Length: 153
Image (cartoon, rainbow, N blue to C red; front, side, top):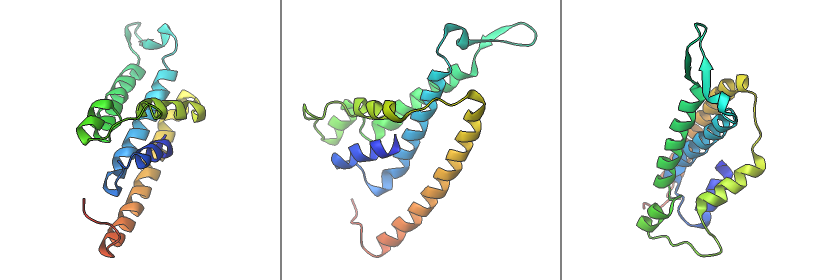
């Protein structure tokens, strides 16, 4: 998802080095959304029964809703919906179609379902890896900026 989003935004000339963290957040939240949807395939998946016999919503419902909201909000910040692209002065051509649709099609091809018990560990590891990558990228960007490789917006 991350590479696909970057590719689309670069082709549209809408991705700047200062905004890469938003694409990282978008990709991570979209991945979380897909995991939640996979864990809510059947109607029974939406309700859990507590040890005392009470019914309560599955935690996956809240995870899905939160990730969905984050995908919409961050996607609009980086121009992945028609309204924000219009605000940014970017026009879609008929051949390109909807950017979000392109992203989703690309992610369907590579997405694999993980067992529920691995979800939190993989997410923690991804966050750790992304933080390391963002620190490294930020340092490289600052060094290049000092050397005059990037112009101010």
